[in-house]
Length: 150
Image (cartoon, rainbow, N blue to C red; front, side, top):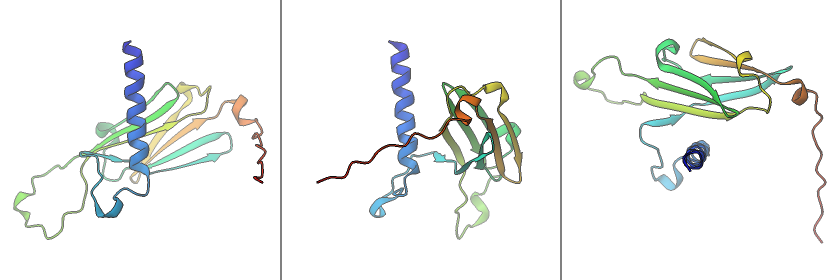
């Protein structure tokens, strides 16, 4: 029962994250934000036999404020951007820098060896390199036939 409830919670959080990633983040001028949590923007591409995920995390100390984890075939990046100084008396005309919790969860191919995943951080970009298993890397894509309607 507890495992089923945990899976439902995971599914719900994945759905919420997917909804936040849609371009309709603020439909029709209405605020549609999740308070205190934003989506980390990423680039994901193949470099030979490796999946590369580059996450935009400027102004974050990776030693203190980033947790990178893999569980049940999902790569999860959790980060927190903190305000280091009090700014109430600064007299802001505009205050657009965001602070708070950031997160992103990405699916990984089946058979990924978690111990072979590496990560580095440089100039505000977290780069995660995931070696693709040979069984997935050499596989040709399956073509799907398209039926034409009458």
